[in-house]
Length: 82
Image (cartoon, rainbow, N blue to C red; front, side):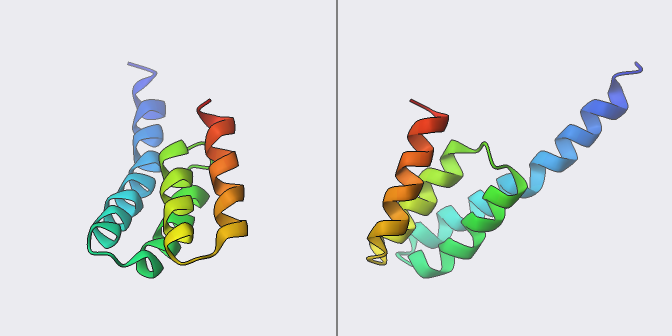
């Protein structure tokens, strides 16, 4: 049971990134990439290894015609999940 506090901390730290991702997905589904972008940046800040957050940020940036930034995020996605 000594591992339980560590597991709880890991769960609590992971939850915000998931919340940001879920909210960003709703914005993308509503065709609001500009609203999704800051949420995805927060998700990445909370979990820099989240390839889903990086991919969705790349998609959001692409939809906003921010191509150089989008390419960088697509590359980061491929680094994380080849």
